[in-house]
Image (cartoon, rainbow, N blue to C red; front, top):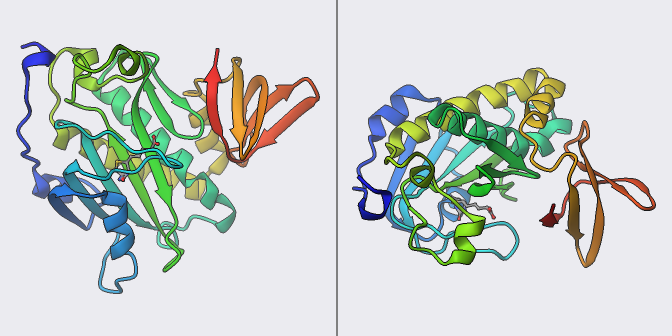
Length: 267
Ligand code: BTN
């Protein structure tokens, strides 16, 4: 079966997701604007037990970082997890590392699904598969209940990019394009949620080890990186991430750390 001719059915096994992961519940939508928007809407509910998952087969207004949209074609996996950081005992000073922990969980889950493939994390939390982006994460802290965090995850699973523009094919990939066979999205999602539970536990118990695990996947270390922070751009050799998850760039004016920014280019 070639990826090009394969069209996935939309069947998720919701009971398996609830039984085999830490999710206390799953809300499924065939079509939804954005799973993050829906999760943010649910956050204030006192009745909501967490971790809670919002899953959509198709997003009509998926959001990426900044002003970007998230392309979600049939066969992709798009969901958001509402996590209560207090019940996971994540210390306040490590809350900024939740997004790195989530990116690590996705990289580990995709490594499980595609043994032998090169999974890397492009700071802060894009997941690259064989040199192209396969997954993006959008972590948001709703203002209504700040101990609840929304972790939005988009993974190109069975949405082949063979018919996409050459420009997009050079930047992005999917699991089916790499393995040549379709993947069960329920299985992928279960692996991600299991890895997420483990990486949040590690973040609570041992932040330095979590960061070391993240560093093992770092795509940018040792490469020349052009970073945009607000309206400024900074070019430097990436020296990895520090103990607070900030990227370190060796620039002509010295070693600089940036806790946020957009990587515009890396060589
Ligand atoms: C990025 O790479 O810019 C982040 C993309 C995040 C996409 C996911 S898909 C599920 C969740 N809902 C959204 O609207 N966005 C995130």
